Image (cartoon, rainbow, N blue to C red; front, side, top):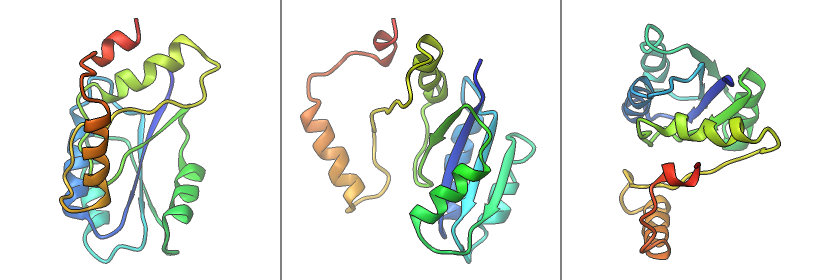
Length: 151
């Protein structure tokens, strides 16, 4: 079994971060650590993140320099996992997300990166929604369950 660090970069989205962290608690394969990089939030992000400490191994990191690139670099420096699994603060992970994410790495140690499909959107009227619509249209007719991909 490999060590998985889930990384969440967040900025003033404590209300959405709570849903993301709740979805990690529900994972079939729990993360070994969750690195929450607070990118200079002014809301209660820290309290929300640390509130999940009884259920998840939370590593809260404050990054005062604004910007996703800086925050990603900070998250990588603070993660200790064999696998770094990035999830946005406005996403909810499917219960088997980490189990399926780990499978390719277990089957082939030479794999360096995997990606998954975005199944739904929570942010209406944004580029995320546009991506989901385009992805759904391009993938129309692809009914193969994820499990089939790893047999």
